[in-house]
Image 1 (tube, rainbow, N blue to C red):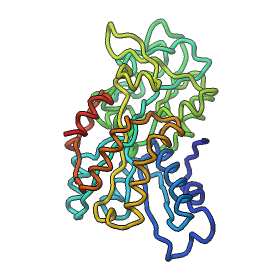
Image 2: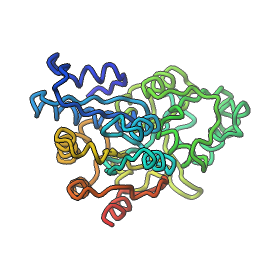
Image 3: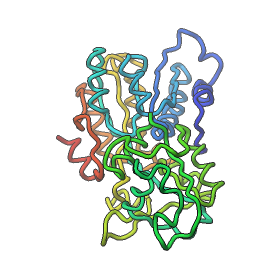
Length: 331
């Protein structure tokens, strides 16, 4: 499945036949993370087909933070999120009277990528990544040789998600130790395809984004093997290394959040149930890492009970493995 990243295209693709434009057709509004978008888009397409286009689903791409802003204003039914809801967003939703349900839908491996012609940085330590991306590096660390004396004298050009992105928030916390703490002199975009193009055209380029966008563009990019700490092995992102917990610290769960009031609407209820019943299969189809079958069963149980709130307390849990997530969800 080709991953596209344009809201207009997504809305048109998901709208299907022209008859769906009628005001009397029930509408499910989704917005948020670009990382979660391919999964939700695939679910929405299949769901609409199963309903013979009697329900319309629109999926926007405002980034996790941008999506929560809309969600906490009551403008959307479902919010895609590549990290848990924050304390500030919890407060915003509470102030607006918005209650919600949280459902992990897959795992992602934030993937650090380089140009295929880059032969020197196939392995990087977390410490080296921090030296490149931390705020103190701005305007100072501009050459690969400054990162490691063994690297060539070649300029670094950086590419990464924008500030509204959950991927940006997770990466900066996992690598720099504080969410949103980063140098600012890099090419930022909420459209991961822009980042793919940038790194693929620049031999000195370095970027990061969700695993699915890497697998979709393997012919244009190389994935960096990460060394989490001194004495640890270099680990490349893959389904196996995420499942066994060895790809650290950039493996993470990704989510959807459902407006509790919207969940009472038949079209939203049916969409969420369809998502959980078909999520494992469709997650694999779009090259993401699915959760164990029991995770989707947990979600359906929580949905039936209308179990509101979050299990994460408004914080990222960096380095959380799938096994640890399952224990958290079972509580």
